[in-house]
Image (cartoon, rainbow, N blue to C red; front, side, top):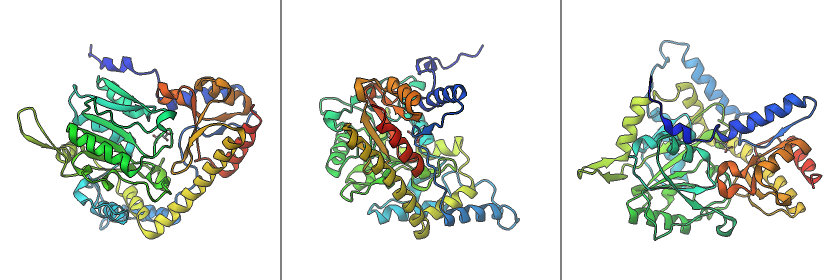
Length: 398
Ligand code: MLT
């Protein structure tokens, strides 16, 4: 009999969004005549921009002729997309090198897979509430987690505790699920803390494209010293509508070096490269062709138009919260609105209440951690029509 990884016994029975899908499926099966509006999982609804679609088609066509056919590509991504990502960072004032860019099928995989690089006995700091992938992937590996409280009192932006040593710190900004975003000074404190503690920051910037406030950093590498202590995960899911198409990238600086127990220098970039070349054969050429077009002027303009559409949805949701006198966070610099459950309800109770009363699906805050138990998340990624309709229904709820 194989000995299974019993750490899996320590996980919740199902992944948050699977649990939500399961509850909604049960409701729709019992109520087939009701129109359910889904503002739960942060899944985009607008089609991908024309020039990006054209590039995807070109990628397909290339596979049809012997002279343009592509077999296995570089595991790290083709040069054309690594260069495009470098140029994108440069436009935002951040210099990275193509060797530091690793193209993948998305930030979810990379934030989970990076755990391969770390030993068991690290002090791992993760905010509560948080994107469940960081927690679950560490539990799968049998690691202990120290939680840092993200609450309304600290605007859901926990800061370092100088009395506490950590080795690995997860940060997400703009944050999923709370929509809160760190400013330069706050991130500088985190970078300084990481450098003092010889720690690594695992920084998820999947929602950077939603930042409209120009005083906020879009990358951890905009902070001095970050290349010595941080890895950044980003994704085209929300930037370019690639939730189904799948493409992301991770920046692992060459300056990120730590010392092994026997005194040897270990490069995180070299380790990630070794990990990826062993376990991953790269993103398909077709997808990379489309993804590279995202970073062109035309592609970016198409993406920006879609993002603005979602930002207007966020405004509509926030306006409804204002009308109802509900305290909320996010909605600006973020596609998520994180609000206090009305009527003193807990979040799963409120989830069921909304589903039954008005057929609107959101995400219960408890699914992101215990500090979320009285909060609820709505996403701005729905269609305009559904967002407006959902908020009309919400106004009648209490
Ligand atoms: C979310 O709803 O939190 C996200 O869509 C999940 C993800 O990006 O994997």
